[in-house]
Amino acid sequence: MSAVTCVPEVLPKENASQRTWQRPFLKWAGGKYSLLPELDRLIPAGKRLIEPFVGGGSVFLNSDKHADFLLADVNPDLINLYQMLSVVPELVTHWARDFFDVLNNEGGFLACRDEFNSQHMAGPERAAAFLYLNRHCFNGLIRYNRGGQFNVGYGKYRAPYFPEKELKTFADMAHNCVFMNAGFRRTLLLAGEGDVVYCDPPYEPLPGTTGFTNYSAGGFSWDDQTALAECCVAAHQRGAKVVISNSTAPRVIELYEQHGFTLHHVSARRAISSKSSTRETATDIVAVL
Image 1 (cartoon, rainbow, N blue to C red):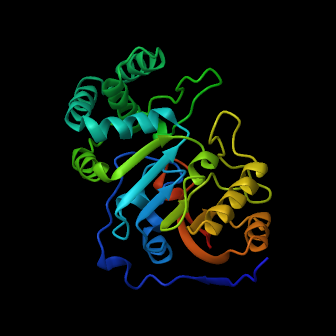
Image 2 (image 1 turned 135 degrees about the horizontal axis):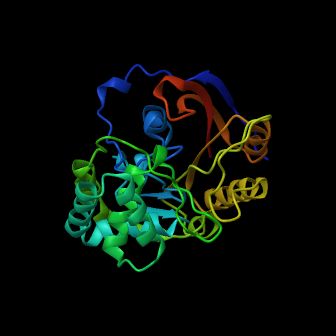
Image 3 (image 1 turned 90 degrees about the vertical axis):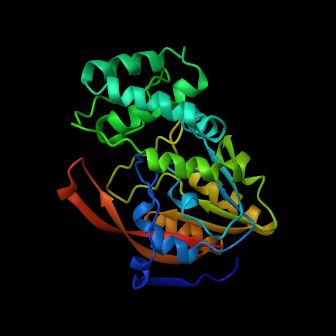
């Protein structure tokens, strides 16, 4: 294994205020909007950016270093929304606007959730319903039960924001994107020379804590963390540049060190409940290969 350089200090932020960052149109647990200044300095330029865990899309939406994008996630509803916005953005926006206008109460929310879970909606309508549920459900959580049904409760927001401007920005970028409903193993097999890979997997919980790792039906295990590191090394050996975000769990640091990554510690603003007053600053790892 090659030697690792550990950079323990928090990266400076002196230029962060000089750029306006594009917000995603979805609420997304673990989204990287607050880390964009640091990530922008660490993610290198390349022809294509590959994200196996695209989530809310903060990183690719703010990329000016890449011409094309391969964006993947295991959540089929997320990828359906992105695909529908890439081909019929006006229709999805129209459906979503109707949902926001008519169903802004608990009864409307539950009715939409039931219809969504019935699997009877066509692609554009289902995409709009997913957006509606995301912006109206409790804390913007995306969670399914064992039967594959969306089961997050109503958020009781007085006037949820309709992200029309953000939807248009996304749709304008989508012609440069390929969206895949796929796991990281399949996605990373497509990475090679000229590609830049950014991985934002479910974070490994710190010792003594529990974390949200429901990346898929079986969760995201330590074996998955190990497999991800190995897949990234293989992609690097094929010519790709790789960047991974994760927690500072000791075994994560050890894993990345063993595989030759350069580690950077960055500060991250973490929302630990639904109240803005209970947000804290934590330290994340950004590993570069």
